[in-house]
Every structure is written in structure tokens, then in C-alpha cells.
Amino acid sequence: MKFFIDTANLEQIREAHEMGVLDGVTTNPSLMAKERICGEEACRRHYEAICRIVDGDVSAEVIATDFEGMIREGEALAAIHPNIVVKLPCTAEGIRAVKWFATKGIRTNCTLVFSVGQALLAAKAGATYVSPFVGRLDDISEDGVELVAHIVRVYRTYGFATQVLAASIRHTRHIVQCLDAGADVATCPLSAIRGLLKHPLTESGLKQFLADHAKVNG
Ligand code: E4P
Image (cartoon, rainbow, N blue to C red):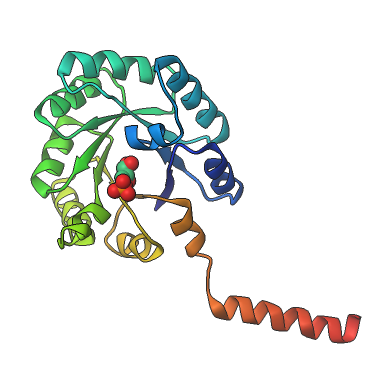
């Protein structure tokens, strides 16, 4: 399973990268806005900075909602760096754009996916990644992890090459559940990645080892 970090914050990306386990980054317009990145040129420079930190796929989302606009923006994003993956919403125009980019050999991440039907269309159009939003489904009392598992089952049954990128991960348990569900990738906030390390027995065990060592070594 690949690990992406779901942020546009350079410090957090650097910290996750330094842990040695980071395979990529996903961003979205809200995450870019949170970092106060404004305008095309600033976005381009920000994505370049991310690509300098991480040697892995970096999803960059279009703002346009019409096909022509998505193609224009997506081409400009893809030209920034070979690791950029064009992120497109799962709408009729978005699916059309996924198909268009697939025929040009440009990789895509079909985002805002909340059903198996949407995931099927993304795969048929040739998306590199499909992003089911786990946390947002849980927020409305649906089962986000079950959607991930369902998409994985369907893709395996029909041999689709599209990778299932579990998104909207809110906590550490989501990561483990998505692992069980067979997700190819989980994109997570830094707090959820850090949470994987936490266990009280690791902490107390280490404390005891160091205390015992100190008893004879001073
Ligand atoms: C996916 O790529 C999105 O950027 C993200 O995971 C959305 O997460 P949220 O529901 O926590 O905003």
C-alpha cells in the first residue's frame, strides 16, 4: 500500500518525507487555499516546491468545471513536472477529460467519488487513480471503508488497472481499515500517519529498556 500525504503544507510534507515512508502527495483547492496560495504562477511554484521534496506522484486539481477549461488547466499542471497527476472531479465533464488525458498518456486522479458507479466510470475512462472519500461518507452515516472495499472488489473482478486511492482519511484507524479493504493507496493527514506509530507498550517498553541500560552503564 502506498502512502500519500493529503496537504499542501510544505512543512508537513517535509516531515512525512523525512519519516522515509512517503510515496506521494494529494492536494485540492481547499488545501491550496489553506496555505494562501493564490494565482496560477504561485500554484505552479508551489507544486514545483512539493515535487522537489517528494519523488512520487503529486495530485494537482483543476478549478475549471467545463471540459475545455479542464483540458487547458490540466495540460498546464501536467507540464509543471513529470510527477504531477491531474486531479479531475467525477462529473460528466470530468470523466470526459479523464478519457481525453488517458489518450494523451497524461495521468489522472478522479476525485470526489462517493459510489461504485462513479468509480466504474472513472476506471472505464482510464483514470490512473480513483479517490473515494471515506470520511465524508462516514460524516453522513454511510460506510466509507465499505465503499473502498466494494470498488476494490469490482476493479479486481473486471481487471481494471485504476488504483484505488482512499481519500478523506480522518484518523489512524481509517488507514488500517483501508489497508484491510485492499486500497492501493491511502492519502492521509500527517496526524493519522503519526498515529500509526503510537502504542503505549512501545513507549513503556522503551522507557524500561533505557532505565535498565542506565542501571549498569550509569
Ligand atoms: C482527496 O484527495 C482530498 O484532498 C481529501 O482527502 C479530502 O479530505 P477531507 O474530506 O478531509 O476534506
